[in-house]
Length: 253
Picture 1 (cartoon, helix red, strand yellow):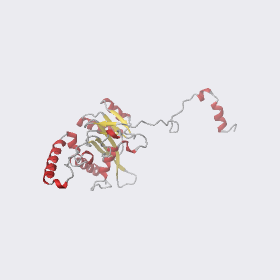
Picture 2: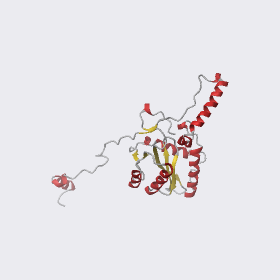
Picture 3: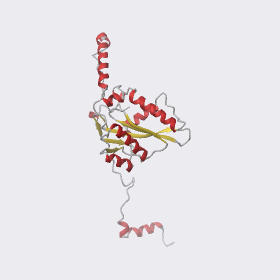
Picture 4: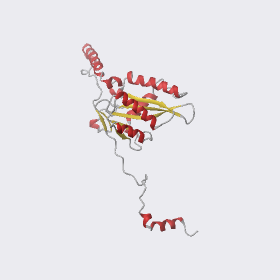
């Protein structure tokens, strides 16, 4: 032994080639905060949000992966699949099908998982002129629409909790998506269904509701303080919008 390790580092620090080496960014040296994603939608097919959640299997440490793309304005699920693993190529296939079926949105938002930030998906979206945004690290509310949709899924009365196999999981999710899009009276879109808001047919149902409510008011005005008003979906929906521009901030679920 000629010297301690610390002595050798002291000698190396005096060598020009060593001192000129670039500093590798780490959590301790790269503390620049990532800007918050700010997204604003005034209609369907503008912003999609997507995520992946676990569906428990009978085997410890094994879970099926449910992929889901949701339009944040209409809350419609425009793409989904259930697989055995999380994979960027599978996500790419899901987006190819969703874009072919519904057309391309302006922006796709997601968290910062490996599949979400993969070059494979990035290239696909770039080829379709679709921008990407991502959650900030360790910020749970940057993707409220996907998180809320998964909560709705897992709090359904018929949610099995554990799926025996992949085919069972796929069958259940297919049924759930159909119910969610066509029958779920969504509190965030004034109790219309995602399909109605996505297509714009909610306006017909709104007029029917208003006609019934006004007729009831005319028959029983003593039951009201003022003439009632039928609510409609908010014209602006977004993520991290300023409070004065985000009337929907409390109704992502």
